[in-house]
Length: 213
Image 1 (cartoon, rainbow, N blue to C red):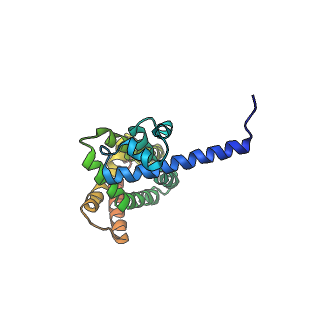
Image 2 (image 1 turned 90 degrees about the vertical axis):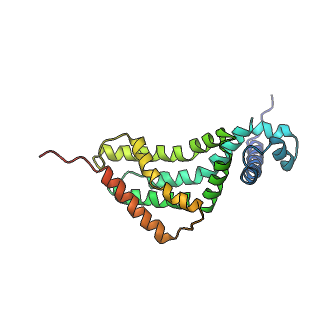
Image 3 (image 1 turned 135 degrees about the vertical axis):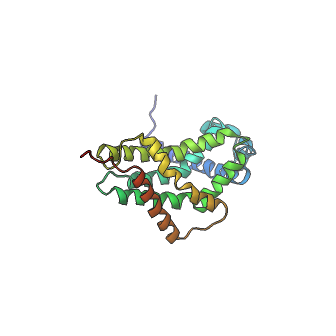
């Protein structure tokens, strides 16, 4: 059997990646404009061009397609979080950098738009909420939990369930997101003020246990 030259494989793979990117771009717009329940694979395939089978060869279901859209939308932020949560001796500075980035993320126009779509659709399509939580908030909390666990081992924080501690810390940012959902536009000064308050509150709550005299 004749082998396919590596150069041809490279071009073929590039075409596949371009096709996949085109599908995701169309699908993301449909999901954002229409909501999860109203979107059909047929409509996406029609706009993409070609047969419906082409779309199904990339994504086996609408749920899988939505999962891929959310994964792509959150990938850059996950990479940013990994760069921020590098274990160091300056716990306060690292947590401030993380919370600052999280506040900017959850109050951004794109995040607010996505949350509005999910909140409007989740009762009819609970799988939409489950996919978003698994790809977004849960992954962020898991990465934060790994960092907090290291800080606990070093004695920088009192021993606790790191995932619950991560939940407590990220939950302190949800008040800002609620205000943004209701139309408030946050200034950088407000982001900085909220960051200082949230980190101070968390560090007080999880301060290391005092050493017995």
